[in-house]
Structures are given as C-alpha cells and as structure tokens.
Image (cartoon, rainbow over the protein chains, first blue to last red):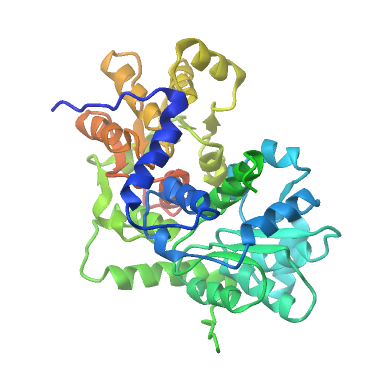
Length: 213
Length: 213
C-alpha cells in the first residue's frame, strides 16, 4: 500500500484546511460575519453537521467583541476549554478566562446543595464584579443555572456560548438559552464540546485581531 | 414554550448518559473489552459515527494498561488533551502526561527544520528514556513522524492513540498507523480531536481502576 501525503508547508496547513472546508460547503452559504466561526467549528470537529446546528442571536459576534474590549472575562465549565482558548491573544484585549470547576468552594457548595459542580461554578461566576461571557462546552446543568439566574434577574451575561455535548438534558438546556433574550451562540442538538467552545472563542478573537470585528 | 428537564441526580448523570448510548446503539454490538472506550468517545462527542470509525489492534487496551503499570508515560500533541486526561487517576498507576508543543526547544527545532511543532515534539519524545504511549488528537504531522521514526527503528512506542481531526493529511496519517505493526487505537477518517484522545485515555484508566484491565 502506498499512502500519498499532500505536500503542504507547516505555515499553510490551516489555510489549506479552511480552503477544503469552503470547497466542501459549496453552495451552502454562511453570512460573512459568521463564516469564520462556523468554519472554525467544522475545522475542530471535521463535522459538517455544524453548518445546520449553529444558531446565532443577532450581531452576537460583534457584541462579544465589544464586551471583550470593554473588559469582559470568559467563564468556562472545563479545564479543556480553558486550555484551548488562545489566552495570549485574549490578553492583548485585556481579557481573561476562568474555570471554577476545580475550586474547593465550588465542590463544597455543590455537595451542600446537592447540585453539580457546574451549577455551583455558575453561582460563583454570578458574584464576579465584571461583565461575563460564558463558554459552556460540557455541562447542561451550567446552562440551566445561567437561564434560571437570568430569569430571576440575578445574572446578566454579555453573551452565552452554549455548546455542551451529550445526552441528559443537553438538547433541553440549549432550548432554554435559545428561548431566552440573552445574546447567544448555540449548537442545537446533542453535539458540541469543550473543543467547540474554544473554537468559537478563538474564531471571534482572530476576527478581532484581523480587524473584522 | 415549556421545556421539560429530565430529573437526574448529579451523581447519576454520567451513568444515565451511558445507558442512553447503550440503548441507542441497540443491535450494534461492541466487544466487551472495547465497549467502554467506544462509548466514552460517543459520550464526549455525541457522535455515533465513532461506532464505525474506531479501529483497534489486537489486545491494545490490555497492552496500554500493562505499559502504564510498568511505568509508561503518555505524550500528547495538545494542551487540551493534557487538560482532559484524568491525571490524578493516572498518577495512582505511576503515570504522567507530557505535551511538548509549547516548549521553546521544540519551537526552535521546528523553525530550523521547517517542520511543524508537532513533528519536533515527537522527535523530543523519541529522546525520552522511558516507554511512551502517544495520544495524538490534533496533528497528523505528529502521526507521520511517529510512523517514520518507527520505520527507521528510532522509536518503539508502547501504543499509538491516533485520532487527529481535520483535513490536510488527516486520513492519510491514520492509514499509515493502521498499516503499521505498532499497537494502535485509531479513529479512521477525518474525525477525532483532543477530546477524543482524552476520552480514550480516560476510558482505559477507568477500566484499570475498576479491575477490568
């Protein structure tokens, strides 16, 4: 068996990947201001289902960029998403990423209240004295708690990137966010993940860097 | 709109998720010793394509467990996979995870040799004086270099978890590993990712903890 590798220079691999994604999307058009986000999610997953799945509230990318420039932080529900977000670039805009999942006070509060740690970590985020963008890639219970606190007037996030993955209440938790008036980016259905959450954040950061946002 | 949430206790969410996966797999049977791995990958991706995609060399899970117990380390190509692997549990078996991608010597070698940093990080891993299991979730160039060094007799990994995701040479790099005699777990095709690499490692660690391996 002879396996032929494409000859692509290291610096050109990502560019060539995005060209392949664009070619394969073909007639499936994405609005210009959203295309870098959808394509980066497809790039991180090799899954063209995201062309259909991804839902955006109006001008959400612009709002996230403005919020980051005005000092918002990103709060995520996994160390993996935190690891995947381009923190160096985020810092150039004054941003920062927090993940409270491994914090002792969060573990304690979750145990006392009989909730998931994700729920408790959202409650901790609601106490922050700076604007927050949520990037939820794992825990539907995090999305549910964001929705509840928003409905009770106790939390007002700049935006919710709601892309948990899986089975128990994942679809439902995303429907809650889609039904709300919070600015949002949601991957409807079961699919998503920490990698998808990080890819969405990075796509927006790259558009900010490149003057597109 | 009324959105109904399933009532599941926090401690039971993962168990219920795996039950849902098993129900949905239905007649699609997976050999007992591989089922926890395939199901955990579906759990982390909500993508049943992995039922078809995942390829295992004979007794590979057993070999990885034995290698870890004998002092092997895991080398991965992303900080995200490193973040996702259950390091506390790995440590109980004496294991450790390395990711060399952000190391200065790797960046320097890549620049000098005109390779990707992933290629350079595999060359660094080949210098380790302990047995290595690779968990590659991102860079096909890492898999290609593993294959080349193995073919030249310069690297003899205990196993290769080869699940990079994407477009340029991803399918081909996995075919190289599948065609080799290295023990391997591969997600054939374009799909994979850091989350999938971490899920495979964790599935094996949980089987070791639970006496299944």
